[in-house]
Amino acid sequence: ELKVEQNPLFLSMQEGKNYTIYCNYSTTSDRLYWYRQDPGKSLESLFVLLSNGAVKQEGRLMASLDTKARLSTLHITAAVHDLSATYFCAVDHETSGSRLTFGEGTQLTVNP
Amino acid sequence: EPEVTQTPSHQVTQMGQEVILRCVPISNHLYFYWYRQILGQKVEFLVSFYNNEISEKSEIFDDQFSVERPDGSNFTLKIRSTKLEDSAMYFCASTRDSNGKLFFGSGTQLSVL
View 1 (cartoon, rainbow over the protein chains, first blue to last red):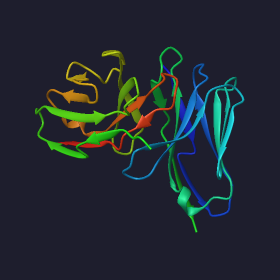
View 2: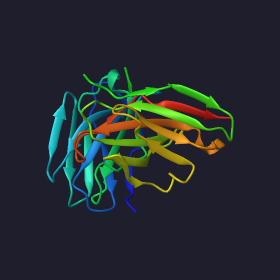
View 3: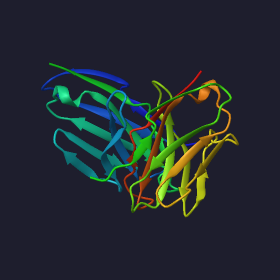
View 4: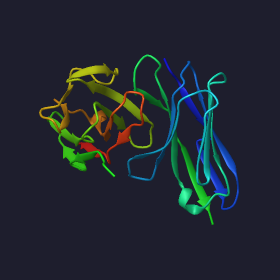
């Protein structure tokens, strides 16, 4: 059974600071996704990482994937209040397309 | 930008009743999914659908659940006899390529009383 673990689950940080969210998963996969969810809202796709060593950046967020370590990171640079949300990583089962197993989510609060 | 639309946004039902949740995936997408999220918990896969049949389903998707694509645009999830533990946000998702980015709808909040 594929397990996906995120840490931390709760993160409170000040504006302007940097931090990293970690996503570990238990079986081989080379497809990993990061989503953002605002309270009561749907899932917004942030990044799709499709190979070992993939790195993608959008604004203050950067995601990377190390398939050998079964680890992805989401790095936040100079956080702003608008980044407050819950961030989920999700791993694709290698044997099927787009059956995603999600992590528990990291609830990020950026304080002014 | 094209989006996945879901109706209704909220559905309240009595235990034992049947509910149908509706979704209109993005028009040129070929793969369709239902996921659910119980309040405060992570998102869970229910079922995937391609070429007019179920590709894969999870343990949650038992005989009480069914999916249908009755025409070229709609994709529905039916729960035959709802239970209290079916209360959750149900998300429809679609993608053009089975390895591509999933686009999620805004969800239907189902409350079973």
